[in-house]
Amino acid sequence: MDFINRFITVVTQIHPTHPMIVHFPIALTGAAFLFVLLAWWKNNATLEQAAFANMVLATISVIVAGITGVMDNVKNYEGDAPNATAKVILAALLFLLTAGISIIRHRNPGIFASSNRALYSAAYGLSFLIALALAFLGGVILYGF
Image (tube, rainbow, N blue to C red; front, side, top):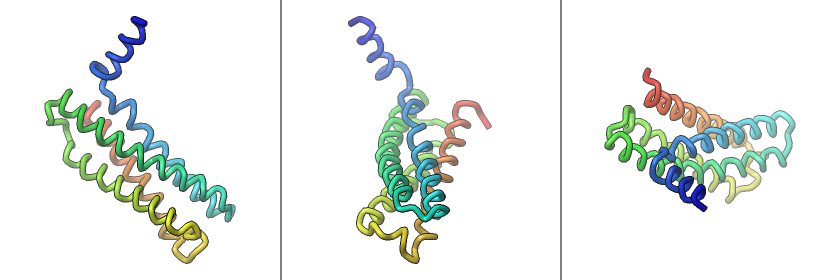
């Protein structure tokens, strides 16, 4: 029981939580982009559904990563982490993009088969690029430029 209490204390009060969470939006947007590219290449609706599922999960993980990022910024950097403003703006943009893709796809399940396929797929790629930019800026905070 002591181990569990120590573990909970470390995770919630000592160790920054953002680095543990931030890998999810990066991986999920990357997986979504990969699946949509494979769906395009193979013309496979199941792969597109996998891309959509990853994008929905990415949207949720962006929210959690954003919240933990703000909390860790306040706790560890007294609100003054390098590039914090740029990261907040990019994270908000990533959330809007991933949520927008998810909502549009949910309302229009046949979008991948329509003439909007290229724009739809490009949005997946853009979300991954934004996640990579955020990862780079996070690395700048930890390791410098």
